[in-house]
Image (cartoon, rainbow, N blue to C red; front, side):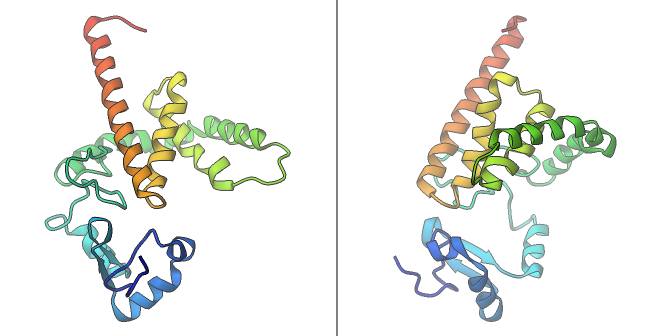
Length: 206
């Protein structure tokens, strides 16, 4: 369906908007800084720094429980990734737990690993005539480093990478695929958590 008015009927899956949203944002900043649409379950789109900051800090009226571009909808599982998907007061506690892992000395210790991952990815591109800097290189680096920080087993690296790279970016380009992958991710995560709890309780290792 063609967008009638970006202020009241925007569609973030519109091909033109996905390719270049800047003209739309500029237009909305001038005439309607807070746009709304009923498409895809309904949403609001603030287009100025002041509005975005006001919403971000107003935790009484706005929540971070669902950070997806497309809402989870009724009876849909929510991805749980604190502190990104948590509200105060739990957000504060979750953030405090992460601070030591991201202290300057802790991050410095990850430099050799990060450089190694970067070199490995570049080697994989090799002499290819073309490559996508995001898909083939950049998006893999933070995922693989964080997987290491979390102690994700090497055998699960491909699965973990798929959860992050395939689930999160797919929403803005294909809502149906995004929802399917989110459900698969939540189901797989719950299953593996259950397996880990069982192993821990039995005192065995695999």
